[in-house]
Length: 438
Image (cartoon, rainbow, N blue to C red; front, side, top):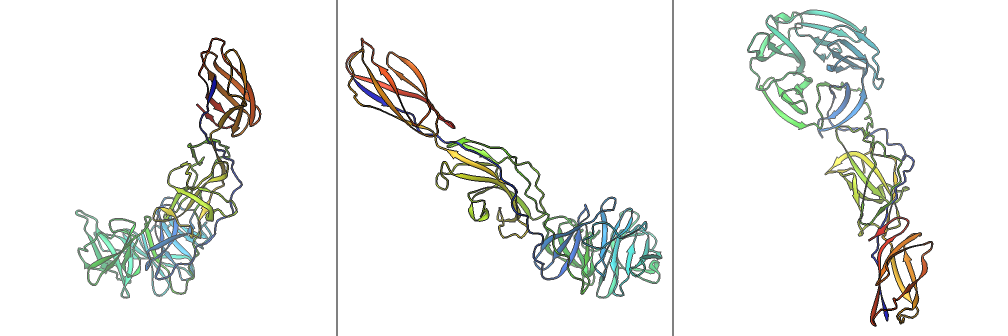
């Protein structure tokens, strides 16, 4: 009688252990170059816009206003005068709280060459003097018109007006600064619906979409599209000459992952235990990463995925090796996070180990056994002890035995009435400390 010994195939396991947070992210991006505008979104977050390169970055978050900021102007000293439906607020960036406030209502503003700020409400024109923080009423707009925005072009102050009565046609008027009621219509029907966010030289983001930067020319009554911005901008202002640019803020935050340990057998997958608490700016995306060296996170990234579920890849990964799971946030570069983004941020990390499936092999010192006789079988295991082995033999049914080490022995007996021939020992199940094979 000869034994035929069969064993199951290999398997793999995963372990995840979270690590302390990575080093703090960069606090400023490089200064932009080219013509610069400032913009604000509906939530009071101010941005710096490089018109030449159509790039944008946040510079400070304003607080102390109710509702959205309808317009604002950057003053020659770098302060920002913002308007909302509840009055004026003066900011000294990066200070988030206003340093002065007033209940004067305004929908649009522009900085004049003499350093004063003209303010338009729907029906009146006023002037703000930054030297004294005083507002003086100049007069009413022409009867039947409601004025929204102001801008200079070619040294002339223009206003964007709309008929109060239907059909509420948009028109451009040249402003009479002595008596606004004598302002004259110069463009009765502009080709675009300019309704807000206008700055000097005709820049606007509120023609039809607040994320498209355009430039309108009053003289030619035409406009051109400059570029599409990554976010919506509801107000615009020029940056006056010799006013230093505010540095860009790093708002990017990749969030955090849970402190959970995982063990996963090959070819299983693991899900990054993300807490869904990332903070992204208009240019950012979030990706899930797997890397191998916590001392060189960016240099050892093996996977950067838009899916939180990551699979074992035998071409780039090994079983029994510690890897790390984390989230990564930064500027979008062709669908991946730009690793050179100065505001790049990485979450804390989770440890992951993929484990191979256990393997067993059998051997006997003498494969020839008489009917009714017994022999000793040596089991040799690959994997992590303890091992629980189930096996079958003809006439004896299924047997289960646990082994504390990587080798062990057990007796197999041949029934007394067994016919001569092959006597088969078959491993039907094997479980180690991490994985199982069936």
